[in-house]
Amino acid sequence: MVLENIGQVSKNMTSFKRFGFTALSTAMAVSLTAQPVLAQRIKTEMPEDILPKPAAAKPATATTAPATSPAPATIPMQSPVNPASQQPLPGANGTVSEPVVQPIFLAEPVMSWSLADAKALLSTIEYIGKEGLLPADYQPAALKAAIAGGESDALDALASKVFAWLIEDLRDGRTPMEARVQWFAVDPDQDDMPTAQIMAQALSDHDVPGVVDKLAPTVPDYAALKAELAVTPMANKAKRALILANMDRWRWLARDLGDVYLLTNVPEFQLRLTVRNKIIRTYRTVVGKPGRTATPQLAETVTAVVFNPTWTVPQSIVQGEGLGQKVLNNPRWAKAAGYKATKGADGTIYVVQQPGPTNSLGLMKIDMPNPHAIYLHDTPAKQYFDEDVRAFSHGCIRTERAVELGMTMAILGAKMPAAEAADISRSGEYTKVEMTRTFPVYLTYFTIARSIDGELKQFNDIYGRDKPVLDSFTQPRQLKTTQRTSDEEIIELDNPL
Image (tube, rainbow, N blue to C red; front, side):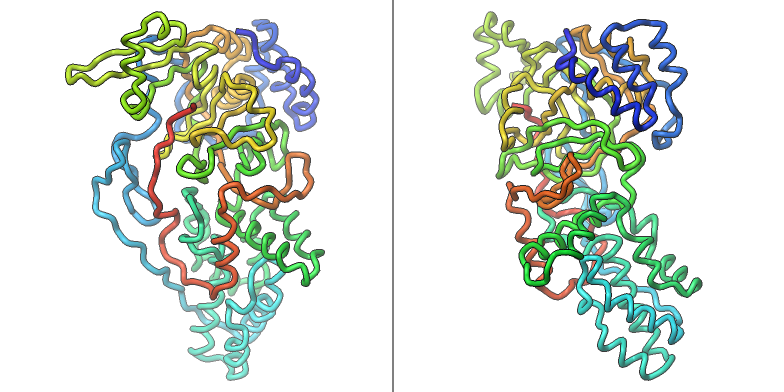
């Protein structure tokens, strides 16, 4: 199979070279010719410092599956556990096998405060508006009165409490969890930067204001929003409110997104490959239709790239839409469409669509295991990439030039020779390439953000997810709990149609 849009690969070699990706730019050229000598050079020259450390040291492998076999499962069969709330997530059958543990309120540490540190805290609170937070949330009047009373247990308790609140909001976001619609991206920052540790360091160094710099997201998009907030007139309340909401959304994610990651902003309909906070490659996307098939927000890990994937058709289509009987009753049509069916001992019909250009997953699928069965994949329906509003899928992210993206992941994530990646992609055979170095992938939702061209733009709120966040900023701050994802229903959206 000829690599799609191959001319665009050649045009963008320079963008890889600009960021030190000489090996990768050469690799994309090799993908056109599959020259074994150059492919070996790429393998030995691949930069070692551009990727996160591997989660497990295992050799890169490419596995194949028989044509009649279902695609390997991408969801754990036993119920995974939310690491924050210890609440089991629904398994593949939508059931929860363990009792649910309700989140508890976070406890603020109490530490000793000097008057100088308390005054620095008060000053920080008074100017926290520049970070998109609300000074009134942190009781400045009460803190000022406590400072006037001198060093005391009361000052220690109040200063510790409001500083802990400030840390929590800067690190984790002010928006309460119930206002984060379909939010399932667990933020690791409170594990990596515990409140007590940050407070102790700030008091030890007598540098309370420094916590703002330590906790603010490092992604340039956050800085762009902060700069825009600074120049937006106070009278433009609607725009300022939207900026505050979207600055907070960045705080819901990890402070540092990683050296190399994939990120898609759903309302922008774009996927970006980012290296050291520089966008080096972009891909148009098709996202979930509004409603039950809307794409949830996730922070997952790329574990494998599947070239020439099979698609195991969900029973909602096999039985609910009669596809199983149609495949059995119309073998000629089924062969043309690439479907094969088997019937179990209990009469259940299983349908698997075989690899090929008409496969609903196209020629490439990126595995990122999650309970929602969401993944990035190719599509034979290329015409939808030409639409301005590209919300047509059942939740998964359809990606243009997906084979090119898959080859890039195989080269960078599995140290696969470019020639081998090119051969596999054109083989027409199901091949799963396991990652030996993992990539974070973020499915985000920003309605004002830097676009792929670097300009700050406003995007349509296609899922109506702004209002709960905006409303939460008009209400008093809520106390934080151990809950770190939405408690909404987890819907398995494994349907590329």
